Length: 186
Image (cartoon, rainbow, N blue to C red; front, side, top):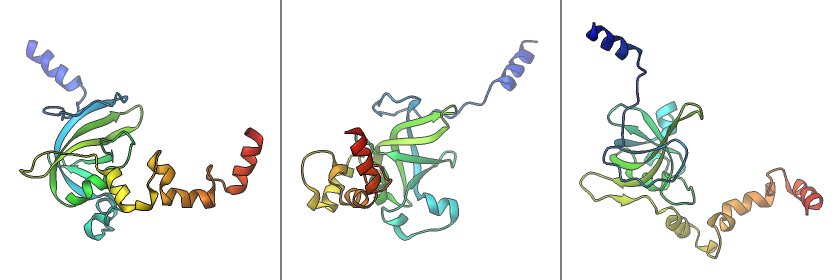
């Protein structure tokens, strides 16, 4: 009878996701539903994986990159690096295009939020190399836009952002809408 109860308990219990927290040294961001996660994965061009529209070198930093976990072939979407600016992880992962690497960071999984396999990569390890921190985005941005030197957040100085604001306005509704808003609210 005890064996029968055990079998029924196994059948009735929900399937649980694999635990990737073992060995993780990820630092918490105190985000809802975050869980440390360390795993091996292949760096892929997401658009290529989903549609077959493949670009050389994973899009050379112009496309979203994904991580296809080695253990279960599930695609994970790395949404940011370890910097507090919530910058994307594509710059960090681009040098590893189509390579199998190990990553350590935070996974966001929550059915109620609709969040599945969202990843915040903090460290990267390729082969036998040492771990590297995923924190180079702002340095690479500064090299790409040396004319944007100055104080304050990078996005206030980014020429791409300034260009969009000059045509679309701060609200994204056009320059006239910005003027009306400013008159009514300031």
